Amino acid sequence: MTDGGGAPAGRVTVHHVVAGVLVQDGRVLLGHRSPSRRWYPDVWDVVGGHVEPGEDERAALLRELREEIGVEATEVDDEPVLSVRDGDLSLTVHVVRAWRGEPRNVEPEEHDELRWISATEVRSLRLAHPSYADLVERLVGSGADAD
Image 1 (cartoon, helix red, strand yellow):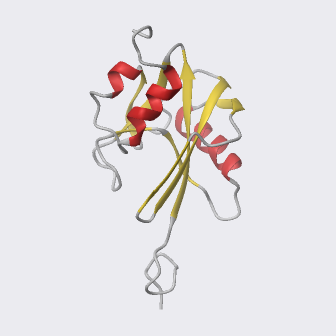
Image 2 (cartoon, rainbow, N blue to C red):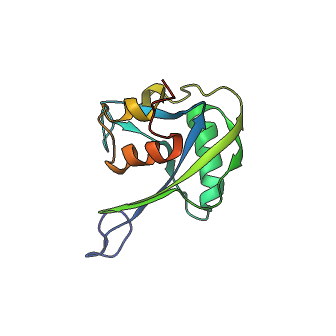
């Protein structure tokens, strides 16, 4: 017997998600999750998605960035800048420091808006996870010189 997600009954299926936070000119790129999304609707989130079976985190991250925002990441920090375990969600976030292509919303059913956000602006947004505000401040500073 399984829990419907392929795990034996009584065990929780972990959703392994990897994301990248693009950093440029004192801002980070966030996506607003469409209100129709089943998980974390109508909040601002980092860009990423599920790690497929047999896929490593780096390959999943590069694939998700291509699929969702149309960029080829060329410089990604090896060590994650954030790891979150929230119920059945396991999220790892890496900093993307360089890429080819201009970020654009390739998957409008995932995000209804992409926006470059400063550390000052992030505190006024409804975020997918509360740790994102501190993460943005760590990555781009206090925001005083970013606006």
